[in-house]
Image 1 (cartoon, rainbow, N blue to C red):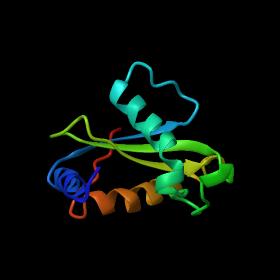
Image 2: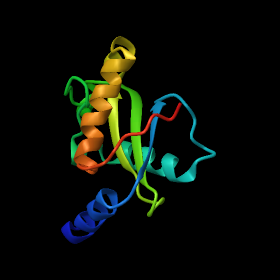
Image 3: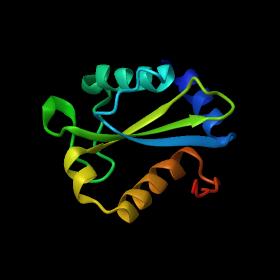
Length: 121
């Protein structure tokens, strides 16, 4: 993906409502093709993108951290684009729901700086 395409994708995120998912890494996504593809893409690009845990910043490169859960965000206006972040297994197991919520909000604020977060409950 080139720089222009990335900027275009970011504009879609900033100008659209987001549908977000926090999904444990061991949950099969076979029935959700877009999310499944996003996770496969994330795994396939570990060496290139060098992702870190959004909780503790431990790197996933070289198997130093195992993925515990994915935070997936899709703009309503472009449901085939998915921003993918991950919590390591240790953070996913140790953090409280309030801590996970605060970290997820921080990550999502980068995608949608002026967005409002609605409680799904």
